[in-house]
Length: 296
Image: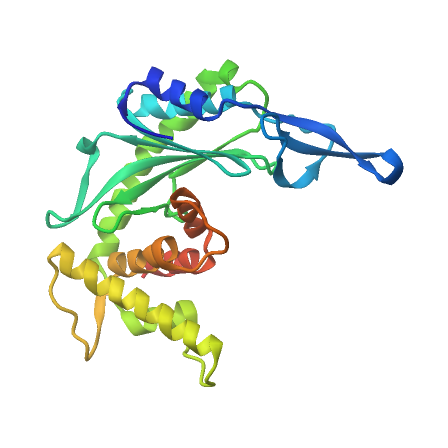
């Protein structure tokens, strides 16, 4: 579910409406109904398995109310006027966005970024995580820069987070500074030029010399990324690329790689738009590109 320009109360209700089910913990049995020390997590409404592994008797599944507490706190960072996007995939994922007044211009009038708070509450035993990332309107990339300090907080996976709202607010306050820090890093990336071929070789390696599937994949991916780079450079009003010695800003280069992973890369199954965002943010090439280009 996606809801635009709503109050904190409306955002909370959207979360409750989307996640209107519980996840239960049930014992797992061996053949002949033998007891085991393991438990499985299941959606109560569909009986589908949740998560990728079993849990122990000490594990307490979080609830929709725990997620609403995180959304409420994130919404208050932006004075309660936000848009929310809710998604479930082995856990609860919510994106909270403020109004467009929070826009940060990176280049001219066409290359802007807008803050996004990403809330991850998976059933994998890891702490809840809230991170501040960006939406780039030029290419519709939704991304995070994990190497930038102060852009994420981890919250202990404890029961009834709504009873700990004061602690949650204190944890989230640092994300305001994280957005400012992210803006500084992005502006610095825009100011630095990098060699396109050198970056591509560093991230993906040299083109395989042998004819075959691996070479085809490598060449097709490179063409997709370069074409995206050229399109976005033209759309933003930047000058032409010198094909004799192609150099672009580190910011452009990162978004071309991240954008390929989010929008163009082949994925198994039929992932939703939100799933593709999650997959791109976990992509090893994207993370390698960030590590290289943030410090380029």
